[in-house]
Image 1 (cartoon, helix red, strand yellow):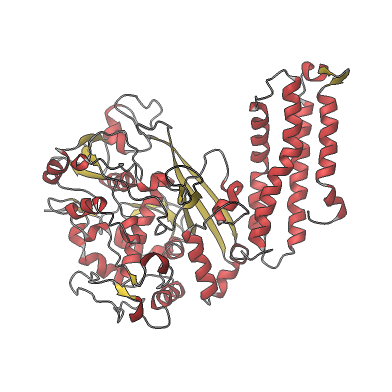
Image 2: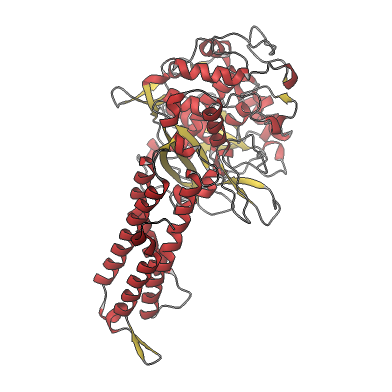
Length: 571
């Protein structure tokens, strides 16, 4: 008998828009009342990202088979009992008007999900039990684990709970709980951490499924520079990230549109097999992918210390795998993936806007960039659709990555990297030459250049005066990052306030004035805190070089670099 069904049990953490309070809701509730919730609100943003993709897998599956009224598309053959799609859709069988996109438009206009979502979930109820002897959610049975990996390796609650992430070799001293409590999990927590485990796990565990010689997964999400769009409520967020179009992936699928097959539409053994045959070829599969075969112990009871058994699965192909829309991409100039794209993770030490060209996939001379698929999709929505309010819609572009420990033998998760920028849609989709996106990218590049030619040059001189090696850039890095920290919120506010109808020249000058003032103030603070050694300086070619002479040069450099501000033009 199955126990703890995800359709009914309250395990999804959401933030209710009306009260601003968090609460737990079931899978059926989250789709029935998505417009009432502001956002997902689990223990970590990386966990929310993993769960968001599970919710999207439901929508991608349902609305690849049914329209917004719950009617089966004429060109799709459906099993009436399971609602499964029987065959891929031939492009030639589609009507001229994109039926999937029309479904998306109608759903957005209605502002809620139809009953067909609930009916679909009910059809698969038996596959949503957390504890089950046949179809345990996101798991294999203990008997299957014995055959696959001789029982697997033991994994504890403190390993699963990423707010603790304690290994067997090193105690987590600053964990939110202590002692035996580290291994205790409530069932709702267990579901959330199980989903996150399949996305972010590392490679520290030893057992492999079928002793595979293939590269093993550390979790597909682990390697992504995750990107998603956030609306004003959870319904909008789900819709903005739900890609429904008959031709959006035409270059990927050839003449057919592959059926969406989430993990719960496969048996546990089938879910293992697909990783040995490269069969993660649709978004629903990718959004619900496994990195581990997992089995729970038979006699586990809520409230007791938790442990399970896991074994590694082969990793999903990373190279040019553009079926993944929710990541930034990096071009490889060297190595085994030379001249191809692979997912590019975010950096923990730099705000996402500082990599604006990577985020927006802006082609530059001698460089190759690819726009994240989810942004390309949003461009499609705005340009093909007739939803007027989207033009002034403030869309949030959210980034999420997992930082690892740098140890190639374990890749243990140590921290999450999260960020967000917001801008008006009319600005975001203006990626034409001399448009807003090109301008903003140029301003980001110029910001870096002006900082290097003014503040960084000033600090390098101070570094020499203080006797540091000419190759020692720690002082320059320190002051550069302090300045970026000081201008960070100013840039975000400036970006948020841009309207598509604004003068580009005026908005550019507005940012440059903010930047010039910030650079001048940072340099002034450094000068005000000069030490006696800084003032004494050093002798070079018969002349004294100290912080005062360096500061005068710094001010002259600012005047030269920002001369255009006095002339009222944009450089």
